[in-house]
Length: 200
View 1 (cartoon, rainbow, N blue to C red):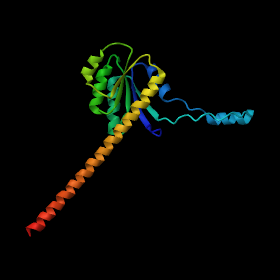
View 2 (view 1 turned 90 degrees about the vertical axis):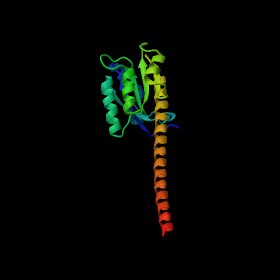
View 3 (view 1 turned 45 degrees about the horizontal axis):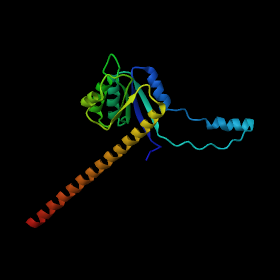
């Protein structure tokens, strides 16, 4: 189930400024101006049938960096502030710094829960080499440039939804572990009291 009220942080890591613009255009679409439509209807007397309501979708807060080292700093800051990224789109080629594979490896060392999309128009690495370097992971997808707009939108929707479910599961597990710890402590105290009574 998609949580439409959610806002997810997305990191775009690419040395090409145009790619950042493309992702922003896709992930932060301009909303229709209902007020202008209503004003036009009032002024011109046009009465149109109400359009079908658009589905409510999550929103994305996109941050842009142009090199892997900057991406790592953003991830460190996000984790420190308790505002982790749900998803990062990472270009495979970003000279003169780290390539995309190295960048992902370093970001995962700081936050292993970020969902990653490795973007490439080139065959710098084979799939086997990428898996060898990053390990087999269900948190990594690959996207070929030039990319299809609807594929990027659907990929982002699915990935951030999965990230949110995993985060909720981790929180619930942490709550259960804390509850178990409290119960064990109370049980230990009760046992100590019973032993003390039995020794009298």
